[in-house]
Image (cartoon, rainbow, N blue to C red; front, side):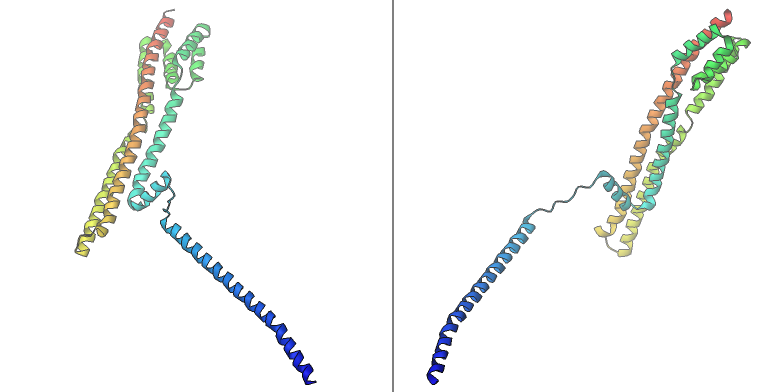
Length: 271
């Protein structure tokens, strides 16, 4: 019996030793693989960090409206809002005037030909109807002149001159407001400049020392309000000159058409 137990013990020992050795080998291999993975991960993280440190930071470019909005806020809305208000009001009046002048322009040669044909075919009433159905200041002047045909050529001339002055005033209506905003925009900007410099000197006086960080805010407000005021004035000045040029063109056409109209009326009254 003792021999049997001894043989079983020896056999069990011989059987378990290879298994334990295999388990130990597998554990060592697993530990080696884990160590290799950890070393690889550490190397990758180090390389990534090095690339991130060496790679230049690319900033997204800002649009013009974004830059304009940022500068508007930096310039203090309290001082920038009046400048913006003058620009908006000036542009509103300028656009209204441009549309009015564009619709006031008409084909004067065709109008004169239609009036002449109407006078020959239907007389005074037909000519008045042609003027009534035509848009623009020239047709209104011709209507007044035809209405005075029975009173003589001198009355026709006076009616054209009188109504011409009225129509000229309508063409120039609102232009003085644009010139006011042109002068007002840089003044508001300069006011922001003066107030900004005063705040900068107040900061210096309170601190008792001249430091760039103390005066930078006040100087920035001063410069930005001035720039925005000048930009607003330049934009309105362009529209103002365009409107003046359109008015001059219309007035010249009105004068030329009035001279031709007087000749036409004189010729018709002689008949």
